[in-house]
Length: 362
Image (cartoon, rainbow, N blue to C red; front, top):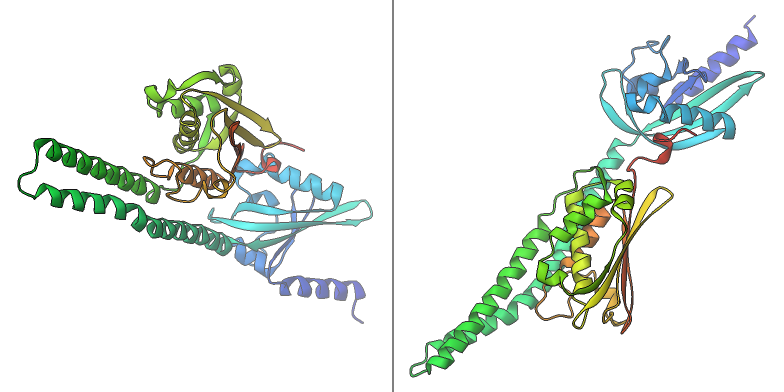
């Protein structure tokens, strides 16, 4: 006669092996007690090779100290955990996975069940989507570019034709030459800014503090323009040193410099500029405020559009570049403005690209 317990166990294993995701059962201490066929393939285990292995073998070394214990703790206390993780197989090849854990309690014994789904392909698609969005943004720039190039070229052509006329006064010649030079300079500035925008790479991230960020941003702004500020209100250096984030400090400085430049140019003729930096939960919020002329309500939705500017001498890519840099840091940027009172640009980025569950014990 067939042992019912053996039949139930065989049926359960058959069901687990049929699930098209990796399924791993393990004890709270980490000892693996079962892995289905998909888990063996995912983790490069031979048949049954997972025996005598710990669940920690599939986590990165840095994550075994905090992230894995937090997953176990959450699962035992709340019955469930789910989230993304960078895992490794037996050959130390890393892959992105989505993990869902459940708690099975049998008497005094806890068993944790982990469902593992390889999402490397999804991550690749997300990256390709970001590239597609960049291409669309550049296509929008190209559409606007024709309009911005047409006027300088028309002016250059018109005044060059006048220079070919005989009998021109020297004063007229000099005037036409100056106009042509100004329009050529305008085109050169436009194309240089456009080249900067279209060649922005993805950021190289590292931990840096906000004192470094602010100092680098201010160093990018010409001294005569900084003199337009009748008053600077910035956090103390010690406070800025204590606030850090995972960022590309050079890129972020460039984005911040563009925002500060706009604030300095809003005065008539001078302006007060206030910079604030605050840590709120797991994100850093920083803002640049001015008491300048403000932005008209009709113009406010357009300020991030490529080549949009209310100033004739400006290219209109500064805030577009700032937005792109902030977005590439998984952050946000927004603008609030009142005509005649001033403008506040608020940016926020995550302190860690890794979630807090990976860096702080629960």
